[in-house]
Length: 257
Ligand SMILES: Nc1ncnc2c1ncn2[C@@H]1O[C@H](COP(=O)(O)OP(=O)(O)OP(=O)(O)O)[C@@H](O)[C@H]1O
Image 1 (cartoon, rainbow, N blue to C red):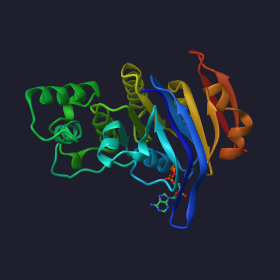
Image 2: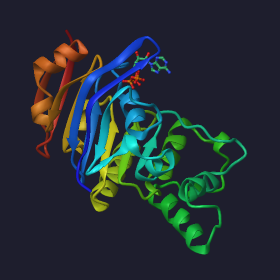
Image 3: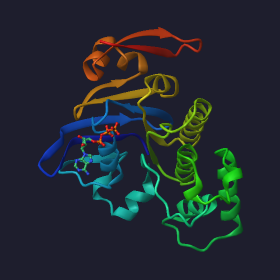
Image 4: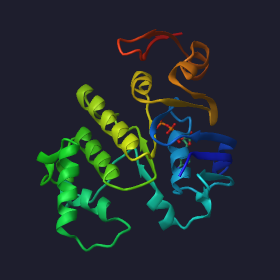
């Protein structure tokens, strides 16, 4: 498998056009890419189109040599794992149950000892082993988000799409979850894209950024290439200054323009 790319992608919700013939990527495997852009710029819609949860009007989504738009839903779901922005699950299930369901999805429901161990290990790795027996209806917003990340990372996919996986997390958990996502994507040589609003987290954890604005790809490249004063000012309507942090990462300081 090599990169993920979209060519000539068009999509509308009814009469409302969101994308008109856009090209995305190629997004490389074995590194983390952050999808950034203001509210309503189309990040979730782009993820849903890549995952096949929405159908493209024109264009194709290519994973290496494979045109994903030509695959069956089942085949596509096996290759592309999408973590949505909002967690939904049946309230009568425990955290262990819902992570097991994600693990067994598309594989059949015979649960082996190895499956039990895999889920327990995934929960420990996600730092939520202590929540295994908790009902999902009793979780905080941040705990639910960590369960969603565990559900995604237990899957064995070629492409992982995370829609704002840290929006409900405290500072420590933001860093921990992004570290975990980044290591998993690199270790599996997978394609990983994380939609983020926090440009500093994007600059720190992602190798490449894609800047989306008003349904168009405005920039793609390294944090230094994408986080430029003018493009951020134009896209977000704020003034920014950038400095270099202690780990050579770009740090964005934003001010109302
Ligand atoms: N089901 C839908 N029906 C109609 N319009 C929709 C639907 N979902 C999203 N939209 C519209 O599509 C546009 C892009 O929305 P999308 O959720 O993809 O943006 P986003 O960049 O993920 O936003 P945010 O950062 O606020 O989560 C918005 O204008 C939104 O109102």
